[in-house]
Length: 382
Image (tube, rainbow, N blue to C red):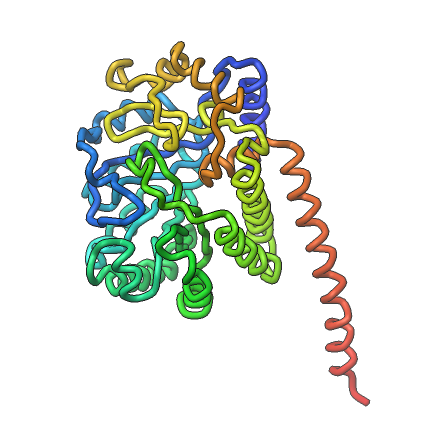
């Protein structure tokens, strides 16, 4: 993690000057729009397919080299690609990412665990995070996701992924819930089920956004702020009551801060902290278009038209225009993937997180000392 600090300084300089002095720290790679879900909150499966080949990814990753630290391989459903492990092996060989994140709907329960094991073997030095999508319990999940039997299959996939943890210490298995108008009223039941029954390594939630990428603009899937605010406050309550330590405590503090930003972004309808999409983070569409983010999904250029040279696309006049638009505050959103990178590059936010972690650590020590004294006294003979 320490190796990203010099990159953050260059990212801040890039944002200040408007010049692309460094490639993005955080990259999302959409490997295909193909999907075996038919979610009420997403129409990505209806988009035309023009997927990059493994060879095209090889050339692209070679041009990125060691710039990016955090990769997300998404879709569609990314595990539908049989060559997903080979794609990730290529990214690992050229880029050596510290974190690789893969979301999945879990439908292919007989295939996904083995495919993820191949990923783990292909990237032994990266932290691999698999997030299973869960938008309801039982048949409610099936209705939101549009596939009968999805919930049962997802649980089988989850069990298969958890079994891998015994052999791969770099694996994190999480659960991800999209809060929409279709499930916001049942969130408390979802939360209790995940925490008490599944007990994942992490549980994250995002609001259902209307995205150009997902072809959901105008669908009315986003819940009203008062309802979503109650969900956020429940999540924050769980974070603050947890007894996390070490890296997990830092992660939880960032997540707590993220939920504060979401509330303010939705209420104030503006960028609460500077958005560095197109500077610190970016997304590559299945056809090679490079976007600042998936909310706007406006191409800076296409990698096929630039001989698979990411730096060339990153430096186009169109890229500069999009950066100016974002910096001017012409858009705002609570997109989690970009927001975490924004927070990491925002000194006031990092300072607040550091103070929060220090305060919690000090409180833990104060709480533990009386317990330790009592235990020592109890162990002494009378």
